[in-house]
Length: 224
Image (cartoon, rainbow, N blue to C red; front, side, top):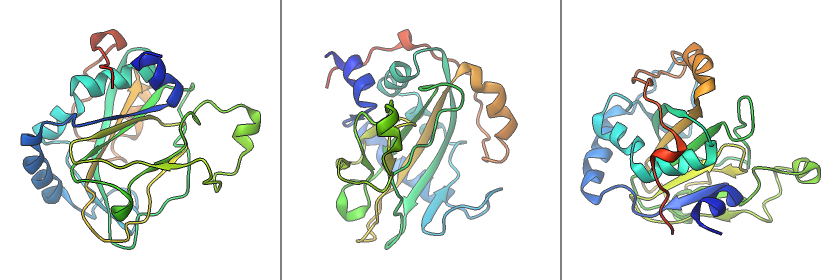
């Protein structure tokens, strides 16, 4: 399989060192400055949430060519950047059950990405996922999301970006050490979802300009 076929099969890719190292100190500073508890809807008690979508460097991460290339492969049509916010599990918190975020109108119309600003692994609650679980058959769809037998836990370095189809079974893990695991949660959506996005943007505290459009052929996904 080439890189695009592998991504479509697995439902995710971990882009190693996609963020320039020189950007990381400024991104962490923007994350820390953006931490707030003032959101229109409740947020999890065991997470720090950062409002960061007015920061030019944060938005530059969202538009990295390799990230847009991966999103384009999964969405398969014109798409837009719909949201970015900062998230970090606190010590002793962050655990989630395996779940699917679910596409809006058709499988593959929404893609998530986690841009890691700190090294990540089992010690600080890195993401678990089940590869190739984003297009389940009837038997697989009925499988309990409590079944962790096929889950893997990713690990890597600050600057890596996990890109995934939102229908992939995935979850954050407990942060047992309390060490930093700051990340940017980024979402992309097919162009046809723009009106629905606009209707809920205020509830999600989206302030950035989301008018830019990207197409799958605009960028080339590099081989791993």
